[in-house]
Length: 267
Image 1: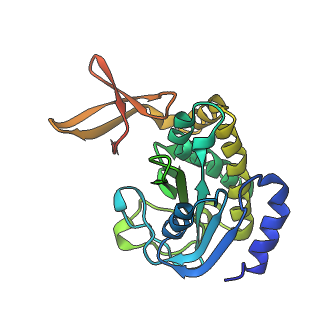
Image 2: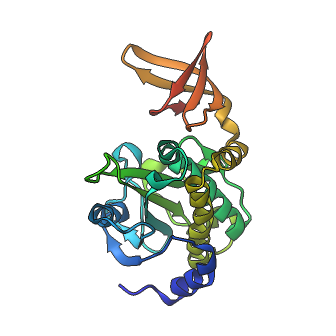
């Protein structure tokens, strides 16, 4: 479908800040998952910077296959095709930091568009007042020359003051609920793309400290918060002690520090 006029205008105004992003844009009124469409583009090769946007998703998902609530007209549902493996320095590290870079970019864009300053919760959620307002899902796409040739980065932002699914209870919120006024979704979309373009350049040029420093500044609970996680020998618990230079969560557990890459539960 053709981009709605307000979205087209907002993206064109932001075009000088988009760099290699938005090389192509696909828009759907209804789709299963923007990540699925972006993955098919990535598998075909040569689509770095492609953007997929949907008005609503019928099969949106988050980490571990969890459903992402995607009602029509009230959220922002976007996927990008990226190639962090072509980074000039440490491509494996650039790939590992994609989700953290996206978290910083979304937080910056929300701040610009609404004045809110969301908190980042490791590894992929944005919170306002401890309620989730946005989520990120990065998925690898295999290529013939590399095990992971491309990364599809999907994100969803709750924008409108909609009623959430009952199972979400009081764990979710939206930008409009928090600011008490309408939020321009087209402007927000353009700002997320522009902010991520800057952070993507940081990844490709090896400016990893710029991403990590900004992430740490926006993630206060990455230190001194209690978390639990499952291991083959049972559940473990500890106190967060920051993240390492590859984005893993560090947790103090007794006299040792654990490096966590999987799921944790926050208390």
